[in-house]
Length: 293
Image (cartoon, rainbow, N blue to C red; front, side, top):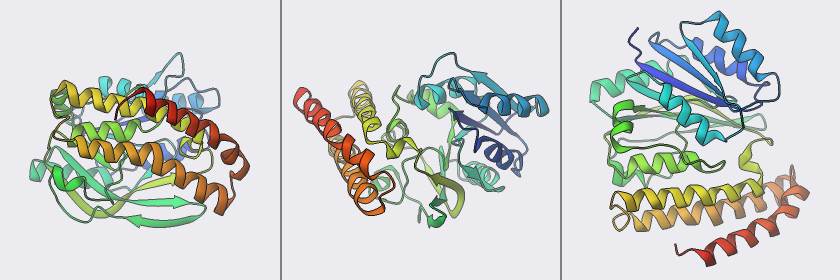
């Protein structure tokens, strides 16, 4: 079969959510859709769930298990190497896609000749849900100004040959690797099209890596990876300001927000985050002194 879209689902210890995610993908209106599961050496029941669904749908699902835990960036890169679709998309194992998501993104991308198609999301946390919509069609330069872009690759599809041409991949990091991947694509000025409807369901919960401030040290790796990419392709001078803005957001602004909002206001992880904060910001200072932005 000629696959229209390859959907890559990396996972690590995602047993509570993986089956729900797979059901949402198998319910997609787009039939020419392959599902690639990459197990990042899970230690829970996730592999059994993946094996069961692969056995049940061998023509639609492929499953690969890594021997050691390498992080989401490495797992997504493995999925990219296995993809056969004209476009590729990503879904996190604890998220879901609306049934029309990939058919709508694919049809819109093909109609417009876009290399990237983006839809809105439903953002869910603590039982509450709100919409984040991309809002308008814009070029790559304007995209940096769109605070509603949502830097995850998960509410988007990307033309696979375009990713190969620009050599876009994920850094081997456990934090902000998704931001780095999207940034690499955007600086190459792809044609982008938007669907102004929320079609992706993004779940945040207390076990997410985003809410562990010590894991945010891994964002340093992603930031360095972006800088190397920009310098390799002689784009650093052009995008230096955007790079510094990303640097500030991911290394300083977001961690401070995490401390203030989650630790001081919501209180879910209050003592853990307050205890971890000095270690994180000490590491950040050492990183800043060792490297020039």
